Image (cartoon, rainbow, N blue to C red; front, side):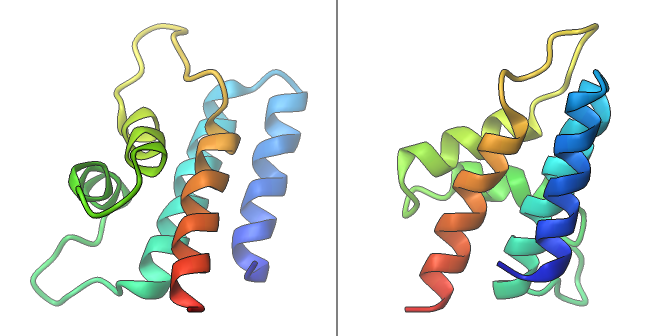
Length: 104
């Protein structure tokens, strides 16, 4: 796993341990976004923001359901304190799929 992605996940884990689920979710999204960008760099036409990339991954029927579902949970808008159960785990599902696919 690239160093920057690992560092982002560790920051998210520390945030979660200190009770800051919102920051853990932000870190999970950033880590997943970095993995996606490593194999699909943003084009000059746009689509560079993490949320757009997560939504595109969620809609990509060529990806396994577990990856699409993880992307959907990370991209979902949070209302109040209704955080996804495990944003770090969702990011890991995406990262392992993307980086595993890119090394094949």
